Amino acid sequence: MRARIIIATLISVSTWASAQHAITPEILDGFQKQEAQASDKAIRNALARTSISVLASDASTLQMGDTHFTYRVPNKGITNQQSSGRCWLFTGMNVLRSKAINKYNLKELELSQVYLFFYDQLEKSNLFLQGCIDTRKKADDDRMVDWLFENPLSDGGTFCGVADLVKKYGVVPKEVMPETYSSNNTRDIDMLLKWKLREMGLELRTAGQDKKATATSLEKRKVGMLGEIYHILTLAYGVPPTEFSYTLRNVKDEFISTETYTPQSFYAKYWEDEDLYENYIMVMNDPLREYYKVYQIDYDRHTYDGHDWVYLNLPADEIKPMAVASIKDSTAMYFSCDVAKYLNRTNGTLDLNNFDYGSLLGTSFNMDKKQRVQTHASGSSHAMTLVAADVDTTASDGLKVRKWMVENSWGDASGYRGHLIMTDEWFDNYMFRLVVNKRYVDTKYVEMLKQKPVLLPAWDPMFLPEE
Image 1 (cartoon, rainbow, N blue to C red):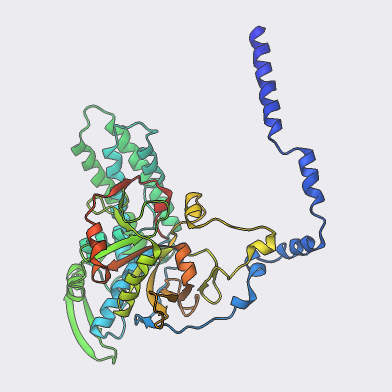
Image 2 (cartoon, helix red, strand yellow):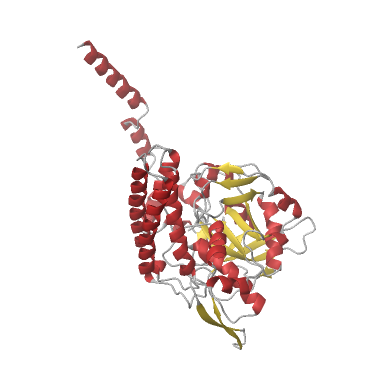
């Protein structure tokens, strides 16, 4: 009886304590008395039938502004990732094709995204399954084990994936391996592959608990599992070519050559000087971490035998000269940002003045970039190709960029002729990553890359794949 009294007393105290911090009828009554203003009623009626972004649009930014750029990388044709999270791959291929088109004066060239995506999905499957073998002795609730099963694969990715896949598998023109419905609409196959991989991973972990099980026997079983994944991928995305014939024509539609290639020899011929790891570096503006340091994200790669994501963290103003130098030399760059923030989809502008949400809602949004990242309010979500900069060439006190332009992969009907134009202020607030050739980077930054990287965990929320 005494125990019951004590328990009842504890419950009563707990309930009383919770009530002290709960929303009470008195609090609600106070809120309700505030909602009598006529202006609020008008806004409430409007929001019942209209998008808040339409109501918050600043009329002064609705029309397209100046589209002149001091420096611009020539580009031909806009790609479309459609309903897939492959922006990282489209961006990587757009950087490469821009280089080849300008170098060889080609009429056109689009590289097959589905070709490398096929191998990306196979490699990520192997990365996950091998991870299950490597961590088989860890507890089920271990943080790494949990992360693996939460993220067996995705259609998103980063530049390090582009670099590793290109080096291992080469590239092919789009005509050689065209898109399929499933590659343009990846959700269903992605879901089914995750189901299957989690089942396979659990099987490997269970088998690994047997004292007689060896890493060799488990890896043999893994290869059999990968055969099943390979078969699913061929049904969804087609069979990757190992050899093909292709004709190139110049901008005047004149014949250049017809040759037989492998994917690796095609890359070697037209991008012979483009080693995406040796020649390029990733710089990042991550306000949460110390600048002028190198960071590595553990297990953040696409292939088991590939490279983790490594970057040099720099202030935004020290990244801009590299970007302008590259654009001046007609070299496009892999660029990633938080694209959804203040995006006017109609005219394709990224401008902090596009929407005045604060005035409409009677509040303010005051966090800076560091605070937004710190509270998960912002982070890199989309990769595009940086191709233009409008610079004030009369400025005598350093580089002054008015605006930037990126080539997007949402089709030519999206934004400004398939591009997005951003103010320099937006760049400062929502740009996160840039991959640039070392020839446009001051040697002091290249020297900084020799530091031993600070290792960050795979589950750090700042380093989600771009989609």
